[in-house]
Image 1: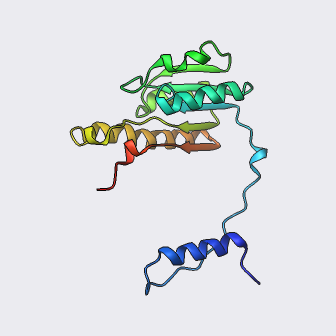
Image 2: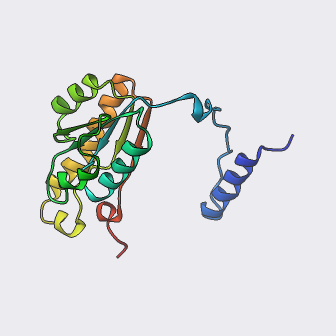
Image 3: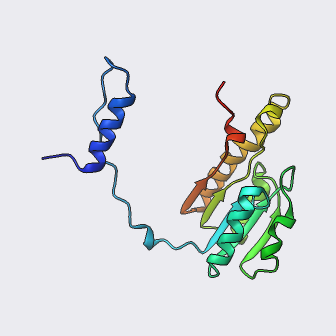
Length: 174
């Protein structure tokens, strides 16, 4: 019996990236998930929603999905500005909360109150070159903040978690 197309593609890709001479592991089937159209988000937590990328996504989403409630969660640090959200100010399907993603005691009550079923995680401290001077601060925001969101999301039964970042977080090739 021939392998399904996704397994064949994965086998070809793994052969391309696996160094010659190393044994390749067999490609296993992944479980078939329910079609995406069966899950319809009702309440979305969007972190970093007052930042450049997050605010543009949030403006689009609030306008495009009026039946979905959005919670903009942002600490309003450098790079964030509530005026970025002026085009959707007063939208009935939007709430804005100031807080740090690294604070479980802030994240959990917000997610519970709004019965969040989807997280779109855009929050991050950017400017890699500055992170060399304050590595703990940047790690707390970028790594610990993500860990807190994942932990609380798992414990509260969040159905979807999307993490978005930029080269400003990942750095550049040297």
